[in-house]
Length: 131
Image (cartoon, rainbow, N blue to C red; front, side, top):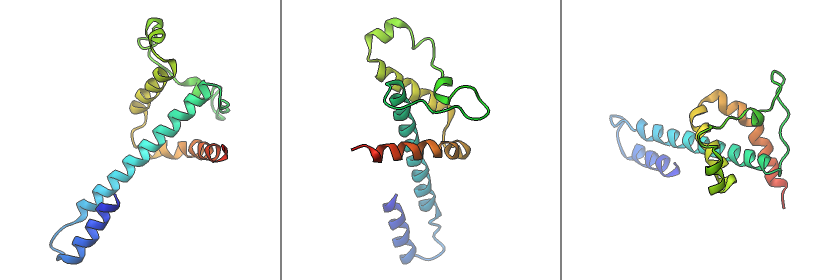
């Protein structure tokens, strides 16, 4: 992303205003949003795995629900078949399920990113507190 902005600045300084360079800045913005989306997916996935493994307490439910988002998380019955779970590492399977469901549920939506901000902040604080 930095290279795209540097390229834009360089070309902008060397060219006339007839040349439209806005696509370079647009590409940098898209890369930034994509990186943020990926980061959020990773933080949420790691947090859910830590809750599942007992390394992190389950969060309290929000005011308008009786269960936490972790407790409401759904997986497909097809992938939860016992023969599959026995054959693979359960943590690896759960991580794949979380990533698959997240991919469908929140793809670069502003309201979702803003609602995850407290979760991300808590995860960052927890990570920085670990030795």
